[in-house]
Picture (cartoon, rainbow over the protein chains, first blue to last red):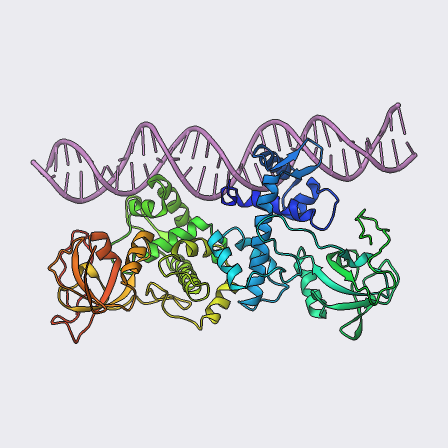
Length: 247
Length: 247
DNA sequence: GTTCAATGTTAGTCTTGCCGAACTTGGATG
DNA sequence: CATCCAAGTTCGGCAAGACTAACATTGAAC
């Protein structure tokens, strides 16, 4: 069954479930899906049932939701589309990296396989999108090893931004404004938990930025081995139950 | 009411009604709309009623269908989107001019106003699409003056192809294969009505091509004043009741 | 171990866009 | 000018995807 046989809505559910597991091991819930899809939980329940009937995911009532290999394949295809389109919009049409998400969200359902291939070719087969997310090639793609959320990073250590979640457009705009972009280097000068006036150094300049819970979990970093006393070892102490990276 | 408030289906109806009057004065019928939309006439009746209720067209039962200024404005916007997208696909992504129609048909509903503007800018504000159709700027656009269907052109006269209707993908591919493209010069060496083995001269080469009814009404030409004995005057003798161009 | 609030599910309804079947209209034909 | 048929319309129904309201389950707190 090719992706195009699925409704836009089904494609969105699969993509959302897949991306939820890309950077976290916490299983996705009906409530979270409802929020992200902008619908009511009852709608999600209905939809999950249909996807289950199509063999795209497994789900016992009140149980966890998990993609089957078939569902995962469709999801990866959608993620590839989304990230290639974002890259295309930035590199070819001059969009800002903080304003491509919504456009790609719509386009990913509209463009043909042919167009995706031509875009991939035109861009020279890119491997990362403008937010730093990996672009799957054709099959499943490994998660970025060693990356952690900024809220879990050790203070004082210099870190490299590898990814900024594109879930919240307003936040992307904010990060863009202050120069906090993929590949940026930064250092935090405060103890955790970080707040909405956290002092950091970014491209040589010291400034206070909003690193409240939402912001500090949207930014993913790797710790530079040279500058950190701790390397990639990090202690887990978080309210969300996120997993940690271990040496 | 911005275009985005209309359903894809409504946008398609308006565009179809508008383009039907672009090169012909024959009023569009429910049956023709149903064929072009790929739905049943009863569906068209329903849809027309809804568009009428929205003030986008006028229609008395069993009467003619005509766009209101509001409906026309929406239609022109869709035509602009379609033609800009076709141009973009050809010039930027290397599509053949005969394979862009279906892709644009889907994309025109998906891209944002912002993206259309950026595409227009990136292309340098083009005025004609790959099929030779004029790209409306922002408001209504005049029809191409003096262009006639190839089936109505005088034999022997040398004509310039200004437009090839993009309604039939297979036909576009055929024309592309034989080198009959917008801007091509050609001469017909037979009397009307032309058939599926009509002898023509195209870029210096004489060949027999299919100019049956469908093909000869899809190609629009202007008559070169220098080479034609008749200038732009043409006699109407057609089974379809198409109008003619008159000097 | 009970309780209860949060989470998830079921049931019924609405809208959109489509269909087929049955009916109406109007113009061409004789 | 009466007829008839193609074109157009109306109507009931269906599927998808959304909603609200009511009901069920889970598990954490006491």
